[in-house]
Length: 254
Image (cartoon, rainbow, N blue to C red; front, side, top):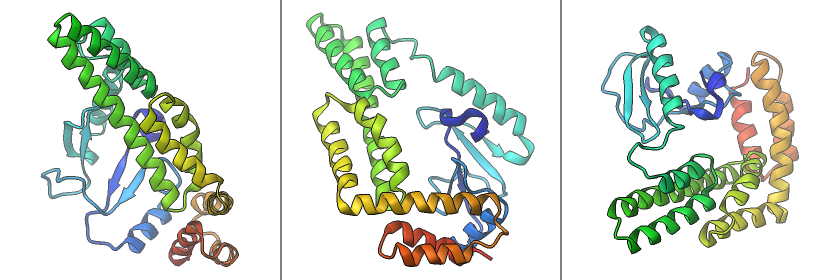
């Protein structure tokens, strides 16, 4: 489903049987479950209220549970509900006026600065006309756009802080454009861009690109002979965050 729906959804797998990180990663690696856009963790965001596995919770765009249960017996329901959620995510709330909807659409497209600018204009005009509903709706969109932008910036920062410099850079380029015109957001993007241009950033970029190539081979053929190549990478790129990631991968390789 992650492959089918792409960026429309985010899939998070949670290990719940007490395995440590290395054991979880080794199991997932051997099953060829690494290398895609789905995320893996041992930290439960919340309880689904079920004891058996595999269980799931499907969240809508507002983070509310739209469907939950046991995934091995509800595949068709999950897919139908997911398709409906993706379809509805393209529609603004029905109580929004046309002006508010324009700002909402820009936010949903990832044009955060445009959405923020439009929402502020709507709030100002609505306040002048004493239109409380539009003021409140525009404020919702403003906070939504700011929240999405902050979340994206945090995502890039996490990638840079954990040895995924190349992935972080790929996300930062369009994000910088989307935030242009909003001082605080632009400043945060510039800070990250400046780090990537620094000697440390350049070193991490080079290392992360090299590790991406090794990871591609590993994820495609987990049973192949990759340990030696990963250890050589660690030695060559000693001191980098990417080397730390490569070292962890080497430990779970056969």
